[in-house]
Image (cartoon, rainbow, N blue to C red):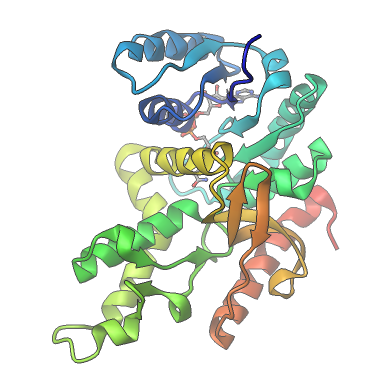
Length: 317
Ligand code: NAD
């Protein structure tokens, strides 16, 4: 009798999707990976190319170009399909275009009998995660958006550079919309257990203005990268692999993801970036930080901007 193995289905093998598949293979996270894309040649070519790396991979991954029927046995469906951000275009500009594409994709996936976990990265990610939750009918715990996982990674990287400390020892979150209204939670940022103000006490050369600029670089990073190379994909691909590992290996890891709020942070009926405990069942628990007044105000603004943008599409009150 065959043992049950983990299967990830990837919908969309563009820049983000193919980088995710490559990182997933290199880290040996899943036993099966099926690639699906509207552009069949691209998905098929990627499957062939990735398979040729198998002799050098840490473990065996069965990779093939497939169809939506293959989602029926999947544990995790990762969606990176859709139109991407053009230079000068905000993530919210993409809302209607990608919601339409998503309706078709999610209907096909659910028709396969899929009953696992969805992980969404396509932008605007908070709104499209909400769309997947609505279109799929799955419980909110099993529909996850990549949210601010990438923004938090950028924040930790830049803080690590600024203080010359390994980024993995920097604990700081970006929450809110994955986009222009996101915010840093300075009130709970720490390095090795010391708050930023404790860390900088009596430090020559420290400048609060630098930290404010650092956050702006986090918030606007996608624009800066898109101006230079047309798209961003490696960082988010590794963030998606991190989430995949947390899910498939039942890690109970705290990651900033887009989660459905039902009273947490005083908000309802919205998917937005917050820290949450992630495991084999999806979102186990949302971590509610005690935000400062200023942070709470900015978070509420972020929720309101998202709701306003979604209103015409989902008729949210
Ligand atoms: P891309 O254009 O390279 O790839 C998109 C892929 O989706 C293409 O291969 C296309 O053929 C496929 N596709 C389009 N419609 C489809 C459909 N109906 N069914 C199946 N496949 C379909 O774009 P990209 O650079 O890979 O970006 C993908 C998405 O990821 C964008 O929305 C982008 O904004 C988003 N993104 C998110 C983050 C994040 O932090 N969440 C970071 C970077 C990019």
